[in-house]
Image (cartoon, rainbow, N blue to C red):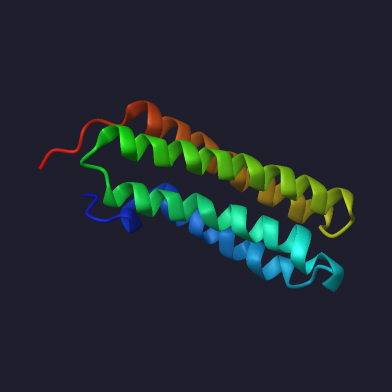
Amino acid sequence: MIQSYKDLEVHKKSFALAMDIFWITRKFPKEEVYSLTSQIVQSSRSVSANNSEGWAKRVYEGVFKQHLIHSLGSNSETDDWLNYASECGYLPKETFTDLVEKNNSIGRMLTKLHQNWKNYEK
């Protein structure tokens, strides 16, 4: 039974991915701190943050779904930043592939949740 946003599988996975990205970016060059590093950390964190904020407002289906759309946007942005990190040579191919696969899986989960969400019943 889902009693908290922390019980949502998509939240668990998006939080874990954001933490993976955080730790990996600690190895990026210092000149990227205020550009690529901060952007990819921020977008990856935004996925789970929007899920938690939307959950708190779930009594309003449209508001919750709007937060899921914001999560999807941040998920897509994270994918783009991962591509930059890879092209800049900051991510080994296997790490890049793993992160992208996890990110894509989260995107599919968010899409499915958005499509299947029913009004929260009090």
